[in-house]
Structure formats: structure tokens, C-alpha cells
Image (cartoon, rainbow, N blue to C red; front, side, top):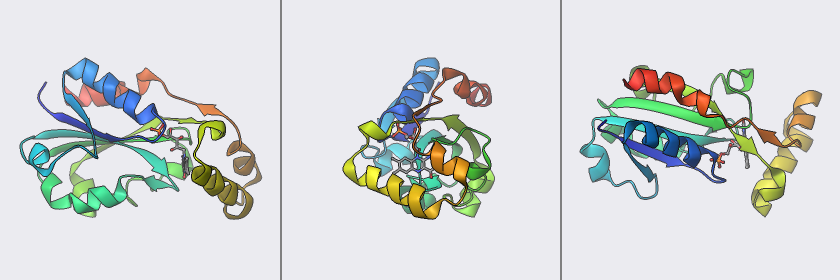
Amino acid sequence: MKGLIIYASCYGSTKTYAEWISEETGMQVVSYKEATDKDIENTNTIVIGSWVLAHKLFLKKWLTEKKELLKGKKLYVFSVSGAKPGDKELDHVFSDSLDAELLKDCKTYQFGGRRETKKMSGFHKFMMFIAAAFIEKDKEKKAEMKRYVDNVDRKYINVLMEDLQ
Ligand SMILES: Cc1cc2nc3c(=O)[nH]c(=O)nc-3n(C[C@H](O)[C@H](O)[C@H](O)COP(=O)(O)O)c2cc1C
């Protein structure tokens, strides 16, 4: 299958999904840091995967910068999050991260991620601490933020695979 998979991953789960999609489609996979404007220009079908940071796609800024290049492409965007796919918390993750025109023409998917406080950078640990202590009001969610979460599962790519075919 022709196309490009572009991903942003901090701790590896989004990269794993990108590689699984690549395995099944033969599409080339590349980190957003290495994807050039030429790569985007020369490709019609683009799958973009981003981990979720503070309720938005980490790639929000990059997606805004590349908006014009991405317009008119067959676009498939997936999120990878600590919150379980379908969770209310993710309701606005795409509308808050993607230009309205891009959003209208792309397909979006939510994949389960992995969150392990022990492995986080000092800055990310600090962000999680602030969010759990002062920002999140829901008691259950506060507790949840301190728990180890591993919802990474290959099954999540199935719907995207069907749409690509
Ligand atoms: C600083 C920080 C903030 C996060 N914020 C959210 C969030 O708002 N909502 C959520 O569902 N997951 C959040 N997560 C969890 C990540 O999206 C999740 O761990 C994801 O699997 C990371 O992807 P990666 O392994 O590709 O880096 C956060 C993680 C970190 C480190």
C-alpha cells in the first residue's frame, strides 16, 4: 500500500502502533521530526499518530504548521492516550487539536496507550503531579492518574486497517 505513517511518541506506545500499521500495509513509517515537507507533498495517503498531552494531541502545533500541506490528502489521524478509548475525556481531543477544515476531511481513531509514572522524565512527573493535585477535580480520575496504565493492544488498529483498504 502506498502512503506514509508519521508519528510522535515520547515513551514508545505510539511508535509501536505506527510500526504495526506499517507491518500490515507496507507503508513507510517516520517520526514527525524526520518527515520533510517534500515527503508530505509527494504522498496522497497519510496516517498520523500522536500521543495525548494535557487533553490535546502532542502534534497539535505541528499539525497547524503543516495544515496547508495536509489539505486535500487522504488523512487518518489516531490518538494514543492514558484515558481509555471512548472515555469522555477524549471527546474534544481532535476538535481541539486539528484545524476545522482538516478535521472535516480526515478520519480519526482513539488507541489505548501506556502510562508509567516511574519511567517519565522529571518534567512530565511534575506535570502529572500538578494535574492530579490541582487541576483534576474528579477524585476517581485523580487516583487513576497515579496508577500504571497499559491499554496498548494491536486490536485498536483494526478499524483503521479496514478504512485504509
Ligand atoms: C505529561 C503527560 C501528560 C499527559 N496527559 C494526558 C492527558 O491529558 N490525557 C490522557 O488521556 N493521557 C495523557 N497522558 C498519557 C499519554 O498520552 C500516554 O501515556 C501515551 O501512551 C503516551 O504515548 P507514547 O508512549 O507514545 O509516548 C499524559 C502523559 C504525560 C507524560
